[in-house]
Amino acid sequence: MTAESVPTGAHSHLLRVLDVVEETHDARSLVFEIPAEAKERFAYEPGQFLTLRIPSDQTGSVARCYSLSSSPHTDGVLKVTAKRTSDGYGSNWLCDHVTVGMTIEVLPPAGLFVPKSLDDDFLLLAAGSGVTPVMAILKSALAKGDGQVVLLYANRDEKSVIFADELRELAAEHPHRLRVIHWLESVQGLPSRAQLEELSRPFIGYQAFICGPGPFMDVATHALRELGMDRHQIHVELFKSLIGDPFAPTQQEVSAEDAGTAATVEVDLDGTVHSLEWPADTLLLDLLLEKGIDAPFSCRQGACSACACIVKEGEVKMLVNEILDDQDLADGFVLACQALPMTDTVKVTYSE
Image 1 (cartoon, rainbow, N blue to C red):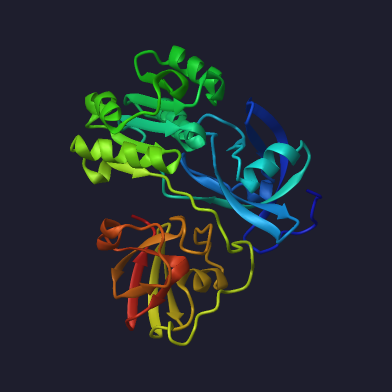
Image 2: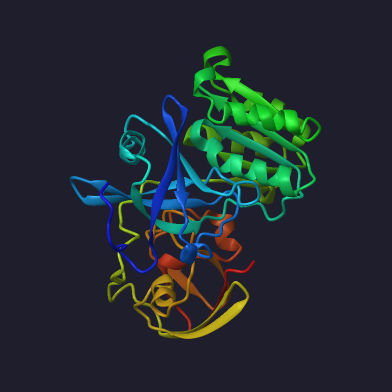
């Protein structure tokens, strides 16, 4: 990628690559330099991700999300990790083309796959590159928390284990708090629900964070539910390939039949309440960005949870929702990038 003089939109930044780390034969970590003026924008929590703009001969660019494997509590750098997949355009481009000194356009950190407290006991279930956000949570919990941490980590074979050396070092440093259980498909086959149930049974009271390929996450989630783990203890990270352009500065178009009711909206973001007039044909995220309010977002197409907020009063409708389940909706969660007003007044919060 050739360096660009300015970012595409007002909310993105050009970050220089400080280092490229070969984690395994098919995984690379990119270490970014954060300009002094952007440090506040790139403050992050363990478990969050970055959205990168990757060049494409066919479309000009594509947007892809990659989890941060660094911890804000232990690492002085910002690092994402990408694993090559056979049909993964973004991951293959990053592994093949990124070099030290290159600049990449990046959106600020986003995502809700974040522990509410680092003092909890954690059961971390990861497969393949799903270990990336889990690694950030693991390091943060060991550094700032006081609970137990169990990592169940599945891979094809021994050479596919990302962060193998770092995990060994951490286990040696924290022998009474960290337990790492490796599962190798080449030796044990794919883990079944019954096997994951048996391995997870001693940790039923822990906070569970699950990340990896879809089939693994489904099996792990079902295993924990069969054990009777409360749904509020189970946290699953979901990514879908982005087809829109979250870097674009323009608003999304809303059809006349989709337009809701003009409203007044109160938005609680980071403890500050903003009162705004909300036009019927304007998506909530677009309204906030237009007013200079630094609301979180990533995909802008309803395929991730980065912009999720809670409706406390009034009613909204979403044009697209590919990520929130029935319980999330019952709890009042909506996606700001897809939300239109349906009542005269609406109150939402990002602060819970």
